[in-house]
Image 1 (tube, rainbow, N blue to C red):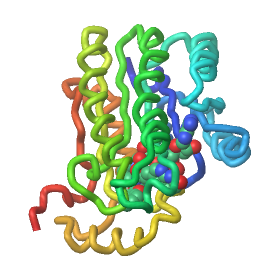
Image 2 (cartoon, rainbow, N blue to C red; image 1 turned 180 degrees about the horizontal axis):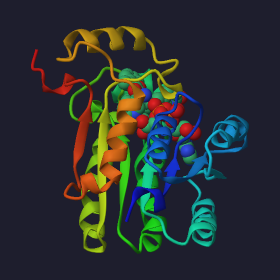
Image 3 (cartoon, rainbow, N blue to C red; image 1 turned 135 degrees about the vertical axis):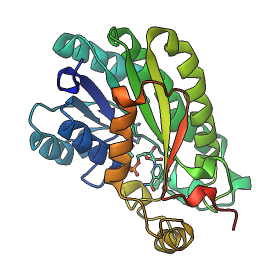
Length: 254
Ligand code: NAD
Ligand code: 0WE
C-alpha cells in the first residue's frame, strides 16, 4: 500500500517546537493522513492553529492519564478512519521539582506521575490502536540517553525512559504476530517546551555538539525523518529497537 493511503495518530503536540510537530510535518510530506492529539484545553488553541495549516489533518484532545479519554479518542478514530497504520507517542512529563532535587529525594508521587505519563501511556494507547491496525502497522515513541547513563538532573525521567525502552520490547513481542512493529527513537537534546526551564540546557547543547562526531546538535526535523522511516515500509524489518538520532553522541567513551 502506498503511504498516501495510510493514517497515523500522533500524541504530544504542544507547540511548533514539539518533536510531535516535526514528525507530523515529515509524515505529512510523505503523504500520511494525520490525527494529531493535544493534552487539554490550555494547549488546544495553539495546537488547532498548527493542525489547521496541515491539509487533511484533524485535531483531537486526549489526556493520556485518563482511560475514558483514550477510549473516546479511539472510538472517534475508528468511525472517522476505520483503519490505522501508524502511531507516534511523543509524550513525557515529571513534576518539575523531580528534575531539580537530588534523585535520592524522588517522591512516591513524582515517580508515579512520571511513569504514568511517560511509560504507562504507551501501553494504553498501543492497546487502543492495535484493534484498528488491521492491515499491520508501526508505532514509535521518543526516549533519551539518560535511560542508560546518568545525566545530572534527568533523575526519575531516566528511570522512566529505561522502563519505556523495555516497554517497547514487550509491546513489540505482543504485537509482532499482528505485523505491528514498535520502536523508540533516542533523540539528542532539542530546545522544546519540555526542555525549557531546565537549568544549563544551553550548556548541555554546547557540550553535546562539541563531543558528538557530527559536531552539531540534532534538528527536530531529523527525528521526524527517522520516525517517518520507521513507520514506512523501509522499516519493515525493525521492531523492539531503540535507534539513536543524536549526531553520534552516544558512541563516544570520552
Ligand atoms: P513537548 O513539551 O513539546 O512535548 C511533550 C508533550 O507531552 C506535550 O505536548 C505535552 O502536552 C504532552 N503531555 C504531557 N502530559 C500529558 C498528558 N497527561 N496527556 C497527554 N499529553 C501529555 O516536548 P518534546 O521535547 O517534543 O517531548 C516529546 C518527547 O520527546 C518526550 O517523550 C520527551 O521525553 C522526548 N525527548 C525529548 C528530547 C528533547 O531534548 N526535547 C530528547 C529526547 C527525547
Ligand atoms: O525528556 C526530556 C524532557 C522531559 C521533561 C521535561 C520537563 C520540564 C518541565 C519531563 N518533565 C518535565 N517537567 C516539567 O515541569 N528531555 C530528554 C529533555 C531534557 O530534559 C532534561 C534534560 C534533557 C536533555 C532534564 C534534566 C537534564 C537533561
